Image (tube, rainbow, N blue to C red; front, side):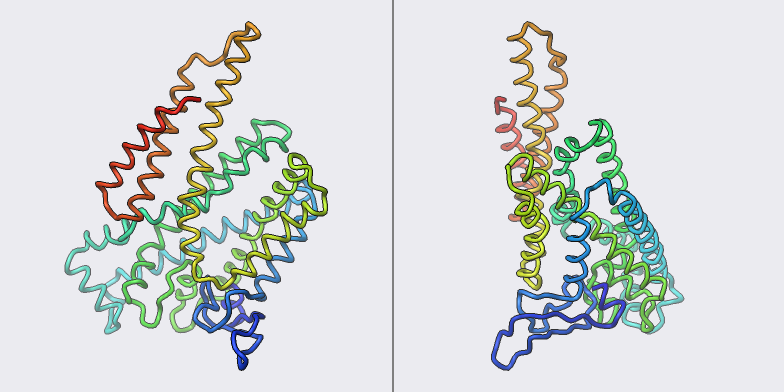
Length: 373
C-alpha cells in the first residue's frame, strides 16, 4: 500500500494462472491487499516484498546491540506516524460532524439523517461497533511480541531491565493503538456505511489517503506513510534474531540453518501466501485460538508449575519457601479469568450468542480451577 500511495501503483511478479495471463501484475488500489481482485495469483513477489525482505534480512545479520540506535529511530518514526494519523483522522471526523460541510453530497445527506435520528445512537454505533468481540483476535495478534519475553530475559544483562522494557512496550503500543482507534473509528464507520462515494476500504492508510479529498493526501502525509511503512519492518528482525538464538542455543541448530529458518523462511511463506484471501481470518483466529492461550494462559500455568517445583525443592533441602500461598492463589485466579474470557470470546465469535459464551466462561473457569500443578 505504501508504494501505491507514494508512486501511484505497485507491481509484482506472479506465476501466470492461464496461457494468456501475464507474469507481471500491477495495481493502483491503495489497500493492505493491493492485488486482491486484480486476477493476480496467490503467490507474488512484489516491490514492497523485495524492499521489506531485504531490509529485514540485512538487519537480521547483526546483533541486537548493534542496531539499538536504528530501533530507537524507527520507534520514533512509528510514534510520529501515530500522532500524525490521529490528528488527520480527528480532522476528518470533525469535518463529518460539521453541518456546514454537508452540502448536497451523499455523505452529507446520510450523516445529517443519522444526526437528526439519534446523535447518541450514532456515537454508540461507531464507538462500540457491530461486532466488538471480533476485535479481540487482531488485538492479541498485535501484542504477540509478549511471547518473546523468555528470550528477551535470557539475552538481557539484567532480568528487571527486560521486564521493564516489555512493560513500557505494552503501555506505548496500547496508547498508540487506542489513540488512533478512537480518532479514526467514526471515519472508518462512515466508509463502511457508504458515506464516502467510491470508497470501500477502511484500513488505516486508506483513510489517510482520503484526507485530501479528490487531490489525495498531502506530501507531508505521504512522507509519514513512508516512515510508518518502514518503521513497521523494524520489529521483524528482532523476532528473527530471537528465533535464531533459540534455535542455536536450545535446539542445537548450526548458525547457517538457524539463520535461514528464522530470517529467510518466513519471507518465503509470505511470498507464497501474499495474495491469499484467508489472511484476515488467519489473523483473527490465530490470535484467538493460538496466541490467546499461548501468550496469556500458558505463561501463568508454567509459572504455577515453577512455583510448585521450587516449593518441593525447598522442602527437600529444608529451605523456607518465599511463597506464602497468596501469590499462587492470585496467579491461579488470573489464569482462570484470562482462560475463561478467551474461551467465551471464541464461542461468541462462532455462535454469536451471549448465553453460550457465558456458559463457556463458567465451564472453562470450573475446569481450569480444578487443574492441579
